Length: 266
Image (spheres, rainbow, N blue to C red):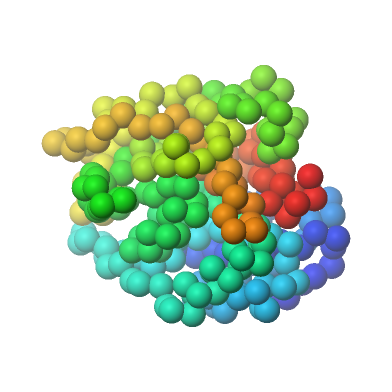
């Protein structure tokens, strides 16, 4: 999977980097998607594609990236503002109707850019921050949670083929989900309470799997949702931490459905 490969009826641009992942296993997810070709571009080169002109060959963009964050072992991360050209280009892509699929850790991308979070429909916070002018605690994570996912809207094209739901083992987030501004697609039966998660801020300071002294309100059970922004379709799907999730047939089906829905082929 390399740069500038356009050889199928449906062409997808994939943004990566900023968060570790198993590259070969993740790219294999796309191998069985029939008429879909994927071009993978890492940051910072991906920034050149925040433009209707450079993104023109692609039907939709899948974001499996986490730009704007510089991690420092044992210290707070450094957050970087997006370049002006990225901000302008992103708005131009939305106005032009380019679809976006935001996948898993993309929820934490560009942490200083509130508009980006608004488009995604949520935000994972590595550090306490203001969200919509309100002080919010850092978000929570929990790896390898086995939970059941069901359709919040069984008629939505993204849920096609999942029947009455599925079980998946994956990382979950206790994060900011703007449920009043999104269309729910999938919900989890997991417990979204602080005592079931670990503090992201503590993890960055070397205290992995700790929630001592950390407080966080109960969170949304949404794990997938959609929005329409400008002329664009937006789908956010919080699954996809690693190979166990990648190999789940329902994960692959939903991701493919989301790609086709944002590309307006279904």
